[in-house]
Length: 349
Image (cartoon, rainbow, N blue to C red; front, side, top):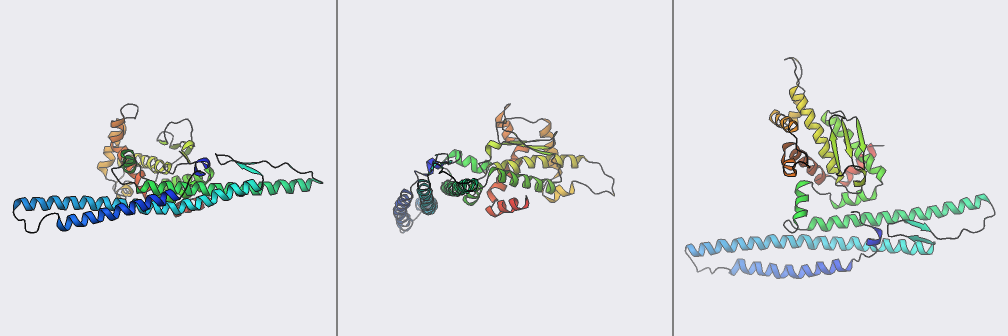
């Protein structure tokens, strides 16, 4: 769920810095304890099998403490980074509220900007148009500042989420393993974009993947009636995507995921293609990208007996074509950069 302006208005940077300082104290204590355990946990004069076992146990504990310290250091760094970003957000939000009040606008918790000014008496149509244009300019500038504040908030959320150690939250661990996660820079950049710009980026990426994979994509269908993020239709040669998910960069996992399904079908078709000995084998392009004939055969068998999530979710989740597409989507989202988003947007124009 996207962060709202009403929520961002309540954000304060100071507690983040306090939490970071608290972790700093904990870290000093943990590092002292670890070093003491490593140096004096087992007497040097103790020998024999029992002493060897004790030292092995000590080394294991030291390793666990070191890992715990690393996790805390990562979170401390994230808290301080988030503190600086939230300070900037506080300044942006206060600037928006102050200017809105001065210029006779209200800002809703949903980020909407509404004029409360009473229009003066105009001596001409030109004066009325000038006044209206100036009001629209101020409203747009306020809206732009709100967008920037919300984009920074999305980045802060990603910074803190990314710093949560593995094993702390099973749902988060599952997301990292199954879908990947957008970096804070990508999360912030994505939040700055309009829905039209997001669609343009997605259209461009699908076009590029279609060319790379050698597949035909007849249509990109934005369908708000579907329950999930999206799907690939081999019969329609179409990618179907949910526009209600556009505010989340996780949709880019879906783009790569569904286009991988298109590639799977293309590999199956090329693997079954007959050619004379003097003709080029169309499957060669897939082998160059690491896809084997055995994989294509396995995918074909899988699609012939495809399990939908409604039938049996575990069977759906663990079938070869889904595991392969999920890996592709995760790798794409994990490695995506804000610069790549800007490139795709530029190329789409």
